[in-house]
Length: 322
Image (cartoon, rainbow, N blue to C red; front, side, top):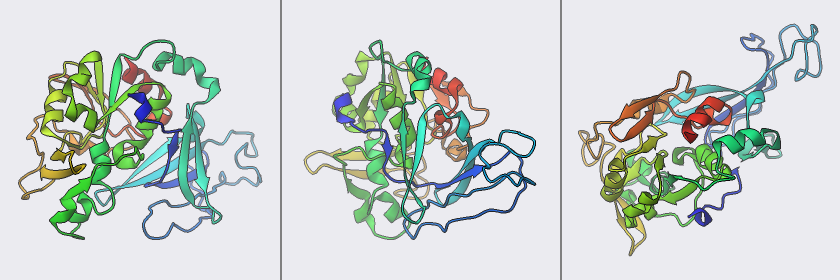
């Protein structure tokens, strides 16, 4: 199945507002130099260079006048259902190579994530380099489709009518925030096996060859896929707000159509499956401090959005691999 997912560690677009800040924690310095936000259609903000208070050092990445190391942080703002959420990431603690791509105007246009050779021992412990993977990850292809141009969210925002509730199933995996971009790339780099929503919907028994199934932000799934996942005995629900809305696939036309959920066909339709373990309230917690896995009938469920924390939190990566 891995052949279907030939991503080379690249997040093609940046949905979040991203700010790289060089400073000591709790710095109050206000001498920021900001580059304007990207134009309409992107929420990527700017790179901000901030020096440590009362420091005249030109190289603020190294030390201040008392030789105190300055720690770099990444400030990320995500707009989730129109609601801004902020996370601060310890850039110097990242256990992957994370590079921000900028254009001539110094605006962030994309991110690359790759393995860093100095963490090879860690990767061998949490990945599948020297052994066969007994875990499979379900890539949320239907969710990628739902968030696409002229997709479900154009209907939710009243930009178009119900014709936007039928969308084409993508033929390529294009990592976006809503489709668990960072987790997808990290788990691919660690040699996890992958299947897609389409694979599971067409052949639910495909999961039976594995001991564990990892569900990402598979927000939109079919009834058949929902049944296959909820009947599997060992599932790690890595993202909140998964299994939220019911879609129907038409493989003759290569489309999915929203059937129920997310306030459709009426406002009373919240979770499209009336799933008792719906944990959508946690999708706004992108900082993911005090994360924990909570037990459900057929596995465990994380209580926060893990995308950013997976870049640096070794304990979380270990927990996912167990």
